[in-house]
Image (cartoon, rainbow, N blue to C red; front, side, top):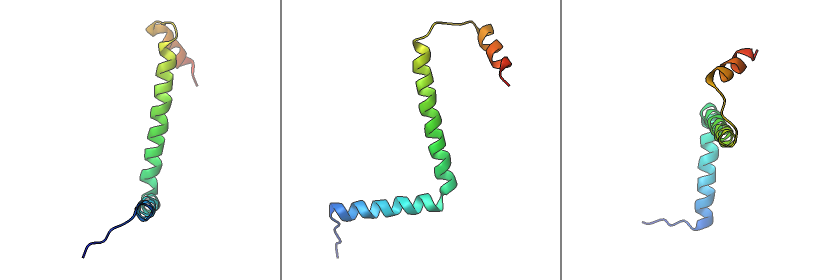
Length: 68
């Protein structure tokens, strides 16, 4: 016996599977989203940095050490 799913049924099955996965693995999902957000922020910072002037290593360290 062969079972076929139409596009809408397949979409619903996939949605249910994703919801179940998120509910069962909430911590993993939260970590995944946090990593994605961090990666996006880092990529934006790199793009911004490419358009700015260069600074010395000492200047960077001085700024980092001044941060509380």
